[in-house]
Length: 245
Ligand code: ADP
Ligand code: ASP
Ligand code: MG
Image (tube, rainbow, N blue to C red):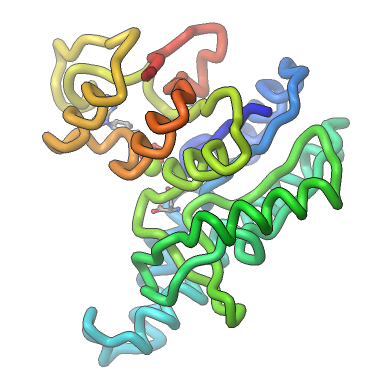
């Protein structure tokens, strides 16, 4: 089992979703495909929530709960679209509602995952619904009481790592809109160098210094189980990108 994660840029329009299908068509192993909300949908849903609740302050738990119920729809919607298109394109897949499986506490907007409970839910679910390809949501989870939660902005990378950890996956691949991990943000620093291979500690240190390329919580679960993390260029799948191991 491998985990492939596609960020918002990789599903931002119909052309990109067709390209995503081409990447999957070349993969023969069992996959869990983790998908973010399309493009900048999460930002728009954030603004929408603020309009619904204009008096909100960030300390307000009621607001944070409402935020998670609204903002989580971005991933539920994108995965429905991707899953339906893949089935249409001949890539049979099972759409999985991660909010029923990835169990979190009720710290809305920064929910903490109960790994033991989630692992049990996931393993049971996968046994009961065998498939070669699962399509599911990054960034979101759910409480025991059935409320949706979010794991913090950009949290889809972390979801991919958690799934790999819980299912003992052989690798995680984050398909992004860059060639891989660079010494600095290649959009800002002209002479940034592509790094082909890094340790978990080196990658974590780069992120710690401010490189917003991979969510900071991604490395720990992978390092613990020695699961390699690939950061690869969505638009150039023939290229290797970066391996973090
Ligand atoms: P995703 O679509 O998976 O959410 P992100 O947008 O979160 O992807 O991350 C990719 C972006 O990270 C790139 O567009 C790039 O501008 C930025 N970035 C910041 N630092 C780096 C770095 N050191 N190496 C590569 N990309 C970086
Ligand atoms: N869609 C969410 C966000 O924009 C999660 C993610 O993309 O990782 O923050
Ligand atoms: Mg991201």
